[in-house]
Amino acid sequence: MTSTRQPATGDAAFLAAYDEVITAKWPAGTARSDIPTPYGTTRLNSHGPEDAPPLILLPGGGATSTVWYAQAAELGRTHRVHAVDLVGEPGRSTPGERPIRTVDDLNAWLDAVLDGLGAEPTALCGHSYGGWIALRYALHAPRRVGGLVLVDPTGCFTGFRPGYLLHALPMLLRPNPVRTRAFLDWETGGAALDPVWLRLREAAAGFPSARPVTGPRPSPEALRALDVPALVLLAGQGRAHDADRVAATANRLLPHAETAVLPGVSHHALPLHGPTAAELNRRMAQFLDQAR
Image 1 (tube, one colour):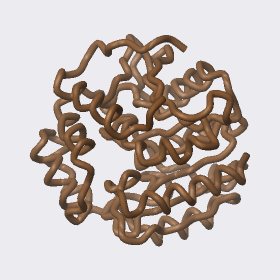
Image 2: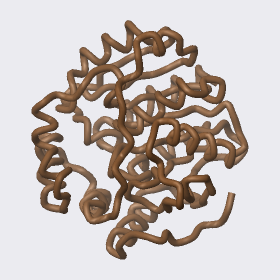
Image 3: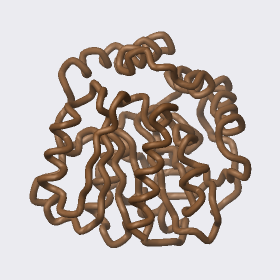
Image 4: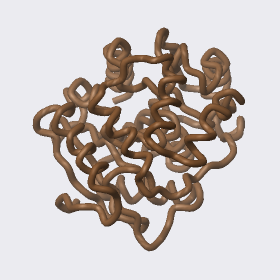
C-alpha cells in the first residue's frame, strides 16, 4: 500500500469539500492510503485496529467513500474499516490507462484491492450501486468474502421504479448542484442531510466521471448457489424500489440471508441518516460479529 497522493483529475472545490468531510465527520485516527491496481489507483479511508478483521465499504454512485462516516467509528471497534472510492466515480481514486468497462473488470479491480490489503476473507458491504458491485464480487469470489452486507442495494433482486428513474433523469443527463439537490430533496422527502456531506455531494456533480458499469440482475440460479452469509438492509421509505418486494426476493433466492426493512428512511438518506444510523450500525455490527 502506498502513501496518499493527489488525484490527477477533479476540481479544487470538490477536493476541498471531500477533505472537509474527512476532517469534520470521520473519527480521529482515520488513515488515508492508495492501492495501485491495473485500473488505476484506489483511495481508501480506513479506521480501526490494524490487526482487526477487514471490512470493505463501497458507496453508491456519486457518493464517495466519505458517506460511511456514521459507520466508521462504530464498526471500527471490531474491524479495520476500509471505505473505498470507486475508480471512475467522484472521489480521490485515479483512473489508469485501462478503463473499467465490464463486470469482469470490476471484479478484477476488487481482486487487486483485496490483494493490496493482504487480508482475507474480507467482509464486504455496499450501498445502492455499491451493493450491486459487492454482490457481483461475492458471486465471482465467494471464498474471499467472509460476510456480505447489502444496504438498500439496487439492481440485485428487482428493478427500479419507473418514477424514480424519471425523477433522476435530469440529474443524470446534465448533472449540476441544483439538480442534484432537487433530486435528493425529492427522494429523501426533505430529510435533513448533514450539510458538510451535502456540500460534497453537490460538488460531485461537476466531477469528471466515467460511465458506470451496469448489467442484468444476477440469475436466480447464481444467487441460490451463493454460499456466503448475507445481510440485506432496506429503506422503508425509499423511492428506488419496493423494499418489501426486494426483501421477499432476497429471502427466497439467497440461502444464507437475513433481511430487514428500516422504517422512516429513504434510499439516498442511507447510510448517513442520523435517526437511522444507530440501528443500521447495530444490525451491521451484530451480523459481522456472527459472520467472523
